[in-house]
Amino acid sequence: MESNSVAKSAVKLFYFHTPELVPHTETPDCAIAIDVLRATSTIATALDAGAEAVQVFSDLDTLRVQSEAWPAERRLRAGERGGKQVEGFDFGNSPLEVTPERFRDRRLFISTTNGTRSLTRIQQAKTVIAAALVNRQAVVDFLKREQPETVWIVGSGWEGSYALEDSVCAGAIAAPLQSQIQLGNDEMLAAIALYQHWEHNLYGLLCQASHGQRLLRLKCEADLDYCSRVDILQVLPKQGEPGVLMSAPLASAVPQETSVA
Ligand SMILES: O=C(O)[C@H](CS(=O)(=O)O)OP(=O)(O)O
Ligand SMILES: [Mg+2]
Image (tube, rainbow, N blue to C red; front, top):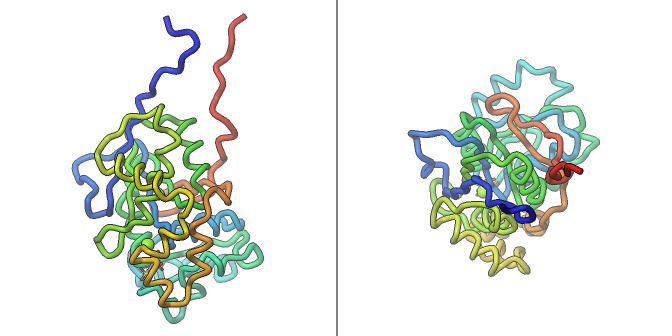
């Protein structure tokens, strides 16, 4: 009998490069959307700054209509297309624009090119989480504590194509769990290898990625620097109702086994 060893859990981790690659026939126990540049970094930052919730939309018009039903003094609207703020919105998609003074107790209604589309795509999963490098450890701790059987990590990509920065974040989540999980697909293994190669120079990787290059052309270098930082926020954005993410209680630690004297 194994008295001192920890049995390998049944958690099975899959990585999908884009929301378009997510299977239509099943739903996982837990789905994790990643958009390091920049939607999920911004969502984590908004909740960390005290936002009441973040409500995501793939479509700007639906956002405009639904946010009208919310009291004006308790809402903020973020709209981004092509990396730039959409006219008439309070914010674009920069986590550096988020301050506790503006966000505390307000609901953020947000639509971005890629990230909010992937969150919308996975919203039927039993549990939905938004992850970025900035809140990586909170997501790792959640998986350790909750042990969902099937986990889909979904990169947001860029308009349907692969994004390096989302893959490296998927690897950053899976790497510390390797001894405790089963790998669901080759994409997950490749993401771990990518992270292990770049873990000491994530900013350098983001600067080389095509999405990073686009943001550098838009003079968003400080955004790249911020989004490349690992574990700087202790926040877990978790879906409460479809499309609405809230800050969930953190897993303080993996539960200890109760010892019987
Ligand atoms: O604002 C962003 O960083 C991107 C848009 S673009 O790729 O820079 O044009 O949106 P996201 O939904 O966060 O990928
Ligand atoms: Mg992106």
